[in-house]
Length: 133
Length: 294
Image 1 (cartoon, rainbow over the protein chains, first blue to last red):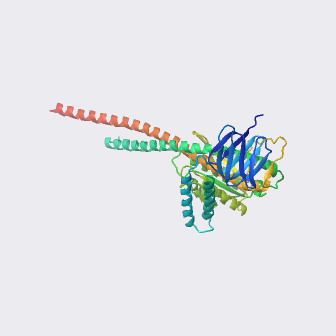
Image 2: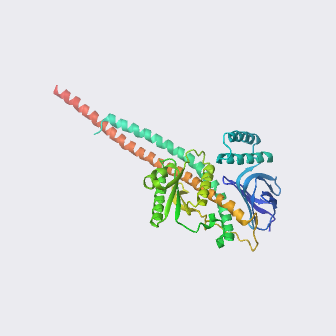
Image 3: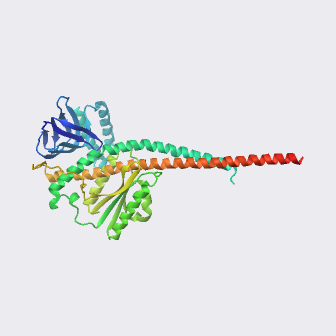
């Protein structure tokens, strides 16, 4: 049996990655965890953070996820992210601009209403994302 | 017989209509490609999530102790029907078919003596159902300002609303009526139960080979966060499918309209030419008989 792990990372918008990898490190809500081939079945929720994908003979991939689930089965690891960005494709300047825009927009909403909460969540996500870059 | 001038006017008006339908067809074709891509891109996520739910509910839901969103309220007196249609017309029978399906569903439920509430998604469904079932409407979701098939916000908002209404005991069962995008030529009006959540029957349950699943945090907590997401995903993919279907239907309808306009132009041109010939002949006869009389 080959010593690789089938890993796929999907977000509602698209499938970011699917293939054989050596090792995945993901940010679980109860702590970061690594998944190697033949991991026992396991399921957890994720927090905002970087999923690191180690591939044999290739460069590591770093994908930022915003919440979601990881599901380890004998068939492999599946991460269902609410939102996911490949850090190799992310543009820091653009994200910074978006962050500032969102912060300005936040001021136009009063605290406590639905939009305010949503914007605050979005800002937290953008800040985490920028920090990960 | 219509006069030459009249015929000319009709031909040019049909021609400009044809230009419009042709342009609309091309716009729909371009939009269809994007909508189809978006719908297809969202499928892996929805499928995986369904598989995870199926696994989890097989593990926890068997004894009926699972969360309410999965196991139901135990009653089925009040039904919520979500009707998803397009914001725009000019797409053949697309809206009418979905509305027809919704109407049968509502009538069936009422015949069974259940209370029915309706939430419409998309303007056309609201207009068409409003006459008969206007008093059943409890909410409406407007999709007109959704840009570039980004329905995430709309689906999230609706999902939140549904969960809230459900927790307040406003309904027991929610079903969604929407058009499933089967192919460019065929969109199938489909009824899908959203709450209580039912994992699709064809979702593969992964064989754990005797191993025991471990959960972090607990199974219940995972299920509790996962279920609303599952509902949102169902809504989102329905919206995407419906959008793709609308464009496909619109493209087909506009293609037909363009072709009809072409036929009409042909027959009008024939009529016009005949009338012109007849007039020329008449004038010649007049001239000749005038010359003979001299």
